[in-house]
Image 1 (spheres, rainbow, N blue to C red):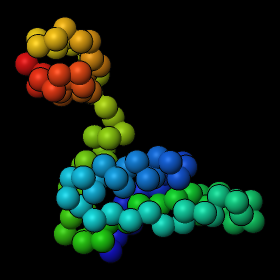
Image 2: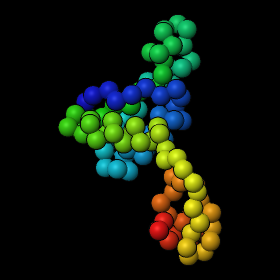
Image 3: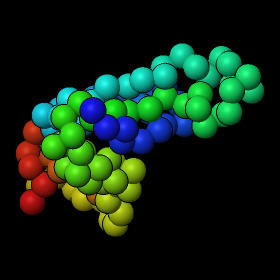
Image 4: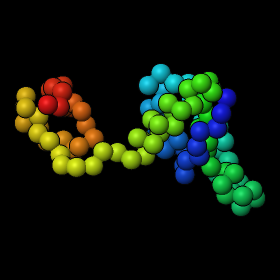
Amino acid sequence: MRRLASAPNLALATLWADALGTAGLEVRVFSRYLSGIAGEIPPQEAEPTLWVMDEGDFERAAQLLRELRSPPRGPGWACAGCGERHGPQFGACWNCGALRG
């Protein structure tokens, strides 16, 4: 087990953990409810933290987390199947399911 990162809030920590879990990595969120005692302990100690359960997965998890923190930039795109407009971060059309071409 190895500490991957801390998150500024529980919602973001859970989102990151779910995304990494979808990629097949076992990641858990610890310190979920310490924000209520921030000030009693150092603020950085009260943030939720992500931990990779299998240390062999750490580098892959770190790379995926970097990608999550820095979404693709650039122009949006229009689906060739239905014409729906999407941001650059999407690889498939939410409307018809066609892959970005």
